[in-house]
Length: 152
Image (cartoon, rainbow, N blue to C red; front, top):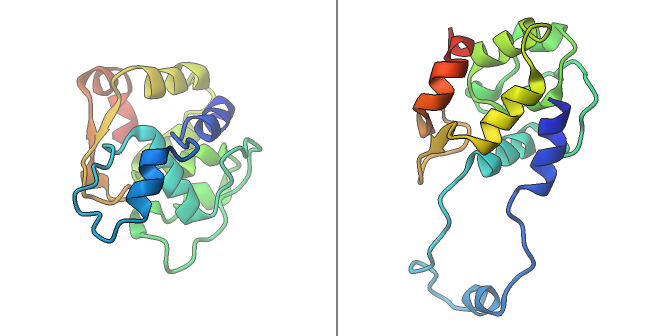
């Protein structure tokens, strides 16, 4: 997951403001503004922000206890609190998946998982739902066939 952490920092889609975005920022009614569809990158980045994780942190550690303001779906499990693991795992809103990634780290190829997550169809994030809401994440067939076992 070290690759995941470094990739997240450079892939969040942040760009310097364009003249059009500067103009839009100064208008009083932005209801017409088209927002990009959420991506796996943006959802994981936002979840990391909610958890207070640094985007480039790749040092394995225990998950710290979460504050009461952290959504239940991102609250660390006992496995996360007691087992040193890559912090990128904490960003997923699926507790069973997080536990399985930690417990199976010796047999899961982290590079392959990360490559498939970011370069193949993995998840669609529903617009209008929170990044931490598991219902917002729709697993793609390719990813489900290869990595679906992580959810059980």
